[in-house]
Image 1 (cartoon, rainbow, N blue to C red):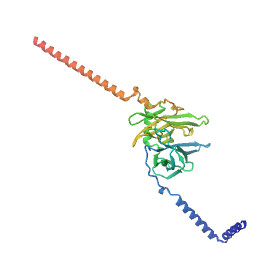
Image 2: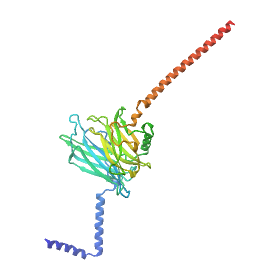
Image 3: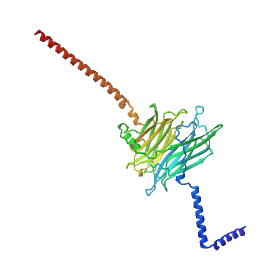
Image 4: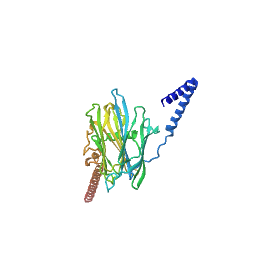
Length: 388
C-alpha cells in the first residue's frame, strides 16, 4: 500500500511538472472562480435575505419566548471599548390552575433569528443573524447567544422566534416578533427629560406602571452600586415586580434601559422583550457598567400591553447617585408622590371649585345686601320729601 500511495503522489507530481506555467495559472484561476461561485450561491446577499413575516404577540396561550438583551461594553488596558450583545431567550409553557407548574412541552422545532443594522436608527435591514435551530428540549428552556461588534458594527432591531411543541395529543406552532427599542428616538428623549424635570420625581428610585383601569400593575426598580472587585465599574440591576403572579395573570411588558452619558448620549444597556411570566418577576443583577463611559443618568422605557392592541408607554430617568444599591420592598416611586393626597391634581381641582362656589355665594349675598340697603335709603328719602 505504501508503494501504491507513493506511486500515486509521484504520478500527480509528474503531471504537474509536465504542465506549462500558463496551464498551471489557468488551473488556479478556474479553481478560484469555482470557489467564488460556491460562496456566492451558499451565502445570500442582504438584498435577497428573507425576513419572516411574524407578528408581535400579546399573549400566547401555550408557550412564550422571553428575550433578554444586555449591551455589554468593556474596556481593555489601552482604553479600547468592545461591544457585545449578550442575548438569552427563555421559552416557558403557560401554567394552569391545576398544576401551577410548567407543562413541560416537548419542543420539536425552535428557530430564532434577528434583523441587524450597522447603525442604530436605521430602518434598512443589513442582514439576518440566524442564532439556532434546536429540537430536543422540553420547557422551560434557555438558550444564550452573543452578537460581537468587535470586528463589525451590528445591532439587532427585531427578533423572530418560531416554536413547535407537543405533549400527548397537544401540538402547535407559534411565531413571535419583538421589535427592539435599542435606539432612543427624539420623542423618547423628550419624554425622559419631561419625567426628570417634573419636581415630584426628583427623588424617585423607581416608578409604577398601571393597567387600563388605573390599577397598579407593576413597579420598576434600577440599582447601582460600586463593584467590590473593580474600581472602574458599577454593578447594576433592574427588577420588574408584578402586583399579581398567577395562572390568570395576562401581562406583556417590553422594557429597554439606557445609560445617558455626561455628553448626553443614550447608550442601550439592559432590555427585556416579551416578559409575561406568570410565576416569577423579572430580575437582572450584577451587570457591569464601566465608568469609562462617563455615565450620569439611568433611563428606562416600558411598553405595558394589557390587552390585544392595548398598551401604555412609561418613562423613568434618574441620576445614578440617587438610585438604591439594592432592591427594596418599599421603593420610592415618583408617581406615588404625584398621586399622594398633598399633590393630587384632582384634589386641587375639587378644592378650587369649592372655593369658587363659596366666593360666588359671598359675592351674591354682598351685592344683594348692597342693593337692598340702597332701596331702603331711597324709600326713606322719598318719605322725608313727602313730610316736608
